[in-house]
Amino acid sequence: MQNFGQENLQHQAPIFLLFDLSIYGHHPAYIQHLIEYWEQQQFSGHLAIVVSPQFLEVHGEVVQFAQGLKSQNIQFYPITLEEKNALKSRDSALSRNWRNIQEWLLFCRYAKALQATQGMILYLDTYLLGLALGLRSPIPFSGIYFRPTFHYPTFSHYQGRSKDQLQFWREKFILSRVLKQKRFKHLLSLDPFAVAVTNQIFNTQKARTLADPIRINAEVKLSPQALKEQFNIDNQRTIFLLFGALTSRKGVDRLLDSIQFLSPESCEEITLILSGEANPKKQEQLKLQVQQLRVEKPIQILENYQFLPENEIFSYFNLADIVLAPYQRHVGMSGILLWAAVAGKPVLSSDYGLMGELVEQYQLGITVDSTQSRAIAQGIEHCLQEQILSDQQKMQAFAQANAAEEFARTIFRAMMQP
Image (cartoon, rainbow, N blue to C red; front, side, top):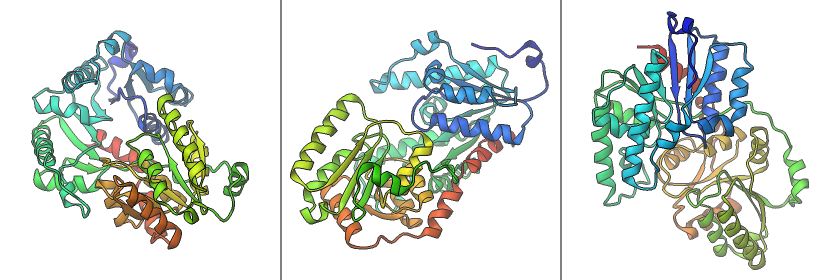
């Protein structure tokens, strides 16, 4: 573990601790947004970022970016390999819960060792149980709560399941314990509906809405026409884009199954782009399924099984006519809605949970029961036959509310204010 110099350990300036042992998904982008904002605002004090040692390998560009700044008060602190290897697996509920306790103890250990004055846990969900059991923090801290569901019965498309009630009770019990901890300052959530309900039912003001950060003015590397020529897409076709990790959770299986319910005439009007990473086994499965669909249906399907840099992502969203988000009972927010809103493109989304509620509130497109392949097919037919009701002004308001600067401002305000 790296250490502050002795002169820094004795200084009066505050030390703000960002703690995040996750590696993939949105985590590196979140950290980079926070580093950029820290530099822009020229905050006094020190920003200590505790990560997994793998983070330095997988996301070296984020570390190099921080090292190239003028600020000399930003430092990454990877936990040791011994600490990482001692963490339990997530293969079972018992080992996951024990690992969550281990990670909480690491947060406390590094907060003490770095003499941090304020802490921010960038993925609080996995620490809530330990906090509810009475584990205490050595410093005042806040955290981002990603997956609240206890308020889902208030949503228009909610269809209850018997096991949901136990989950809702469990969440509310845990939150009631966590919110009472004196050193717990702010519960930040990407779900504004959860924030309102939390503050109301727990009679608190600790819950605050957090933007899901998006760059509003991101660079567009390739024009839609250039991509159409590159991929040989007929100008008469309607382009549907499924972007992101190509997993069952994202709905790629249900989406491909839905094509069997489309008429040949509809398939002739469609170009479907699958763009995102898939593990080798999943990639092979998808390739076989796509190959079979090409034989059975006159549909154009383009496959791109690789990670895209940010400046290419917007090119794909600008190319699309419809952005697909057929998640399978997804809890929480999705950046897909934001990418689509910035590009001004309507979505065909799952109607479940927060995503369904946001699509309808901001008129971002249409929602369907994405657990049913036939419902997805009906949604696609609707997109081909009628203009989707989407409100460009509301789309842009949705995107602006989630600007990267708003995200970072809220994080640092939570740490720096009482």
